[in-house]
Length: 470
Ligand SMILES: Nc1ncnc2c1ncn2[C@@H]1O[C@H](COP(=O)(O)OP(=O)(O)OP(=O)(O)O)[C@@H](O)[C@H]1O
Image (tube, rainbow, N blue to C red):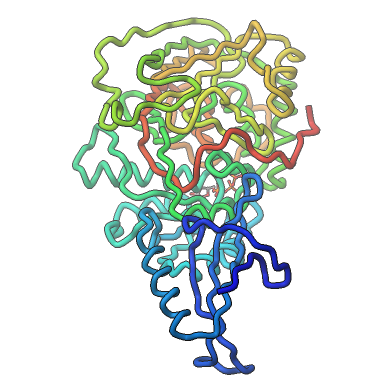
């Protein structure tokens, strides 16, 4: 056999690892219009090639005119490929056609479906028609038929499906109180405006990279948080922002008619102009440094079935005061805007979350802190910023002035429906990019490795944009 890499025009010797091969086909000489038969020419091995954090499709051509040799190689390679665990054969796909620029269907059809077809992955597709659609399908469908779930959409769609996967696991395990690890892995094809979760497990916003991680069965366990208020679960998710992040999203939601980048910049500038701290009580439970390291990975055997709720020695730290912003993030939250992540001190599966509390500061100091996310590190080297590695957080707003009262002078309020309706003053939270209004104390608990995503740990995202508005 003669080996070379590339499309046949560049004949360059090279090495292809079998673990990167996702399809093998017999090549035949066929006349125009001929559907079957034809002289055997050899094999084509379709594999993934790494270019930085990007995964790209490539082909290796093995030429041999002997039908016997070719079929023997074909059968052996096919058998070897089926031996790889984690590679899905049948997936449930959800596409949100309304995401960002309404391109999710095209993205799936042009960049993802051909790769799935080549890898012989069967699909069952639902194009969602409303908020909550994927959640209701996930509650009812026969999960054991599938090997994985795929979401084509933005962070809101991803959050809904992650929440749905954990709720479904709880339902199946008859565990109404305790979260249960999701049974199926989730693949994320980015089609939103920021795609923080996708960026955090792929390092790039690229549908082909995302699809190849699914096809090759790259599995990554990921920590999640539960968000509850008044003893009632609000949702499961990866990140929450209170104060500046919540108010800024609430302002952006009022301007849904603007493009997402304009909307974000408008909200950022306006919220900065009306910058005000939240008066609240912040309590947190430090993550146990014995079994988890802030920058490293946990010993999987130790926390495999560990339930944080069973911890006995819980010593809460409590501070009361004025905060411009409080963020809790169980994943690094990488994005093109913040390549090292909004929470660079946490990793995907270290069993803890990063608490970033920004105390009261002048507008210019706060802007300096924000700007450092996009360019360099050092965003936490300010006396008014504190960070902790935590396993649980409680935030109790003390102000009587909620969001609606403060903003009542603004024009019509077309916010999305809040999950919890407030009776008194309510406060906007940004939970995985979705606006949630909550009036009371919010309790956040980290659940180690609650979900598995297709992807891998990456330390930095590709930066392709910069924010010009601050
Ligand atoms: N057909 C639909 N019409 C309206 N909303 C939908 C539809 N399908 C799903 N949704 C909901 O839309 C919300 C936002 O979805 P998504 O995050 O994918 O888009 P986006 O908000 O435009 O993207 P981004 O968050 O990156 O800006 C999700 O909560 C999802 O449940």
